[in-house]
Image (cartoon, rainbow, N blue to C red):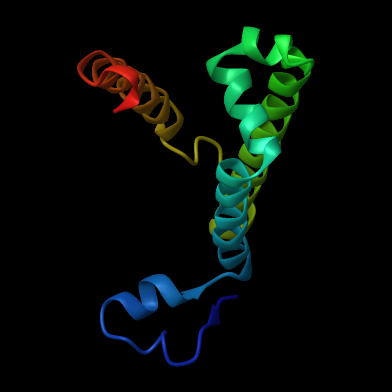
Length: 129
């Protein structure tokens, strides 16, 4: 069952596509915004970035880098599991084998391509400028 946002759901073209969704979709968007702010503007976000970029610097600051990375991996796995549960139960209404049609492999390839693009950017823009 969807929950339309009054006023916005009646917009032509984008209204039904963006503003007439299941409540879990709205919750996921709000959660993504909160996590983005948490990652960019808090000490925890700085710790997580350092755990991925410079683990040695994190260790020298007295923070356990392995613990930070393991915690981030566990949270990422939990979010992926919630997304899969939403896709199979709410999106389709029932469990269907091979529901994603290989989209997971496409995501892996996109992540690999993004990493290559990031390396090119780091060589062409020294010191992050």
